[in-house]
Length: 249
Image 1 (cartoon, one colour):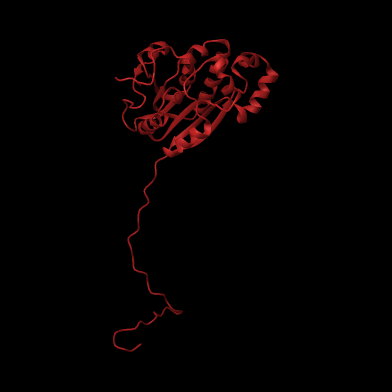
Image 2 (spheres, one colour):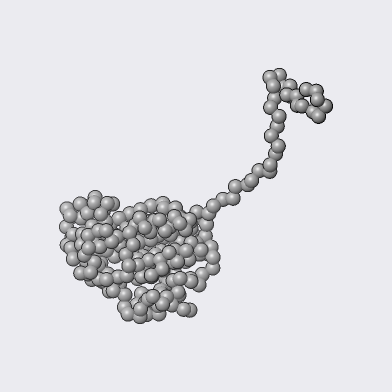
């Protein structure tokens, strides 16, 4: 299979950072969010495209029977234990074959995120679910990310939602998490007062957003056959007389 040409063979800096102390705070929070968003999703097949293994427990708790992890490169597959390698712009999956797709920061790893979303829309069954996570550039995390790691292009939540609507998705749920800059993440995770404040402020200022979207299929509206307008009835049911070509009314 071909690989995404926009991906390098170098190790993923995000995955490396997630194995650090502050990164583990984010990994734990994201895993809990994914588990909540998938709690009421049923089906046979779920594919996680990108990212690593820290979502395994959340996926194992889902009600979808078969779960596959897909990576954009062979190097990434070896690092994360993915069983499938494929081009993110041309997924080797049949149309309308998946019940759910998980994109954990995957849009940030490709220069053509809208193409990837179009592919996800193609492979999802009607009313299939997409769970997506991303970093919010307009946040404290966005300002401090270079001190922790540099990972692709960050897209704002409103921009991603606009792309999803263009592809025919409807947003069902939204969540935010983590308002502190990366260097303080581990400290805040251990402080109950700051953690509680962070949960309260996260819906507005969270550095990480998550959303669940459903694939909507437009229903065809039958067009009624044209019928000539019936003559207006006068009181009593009599029909208004019409003028004939005889000159008489």
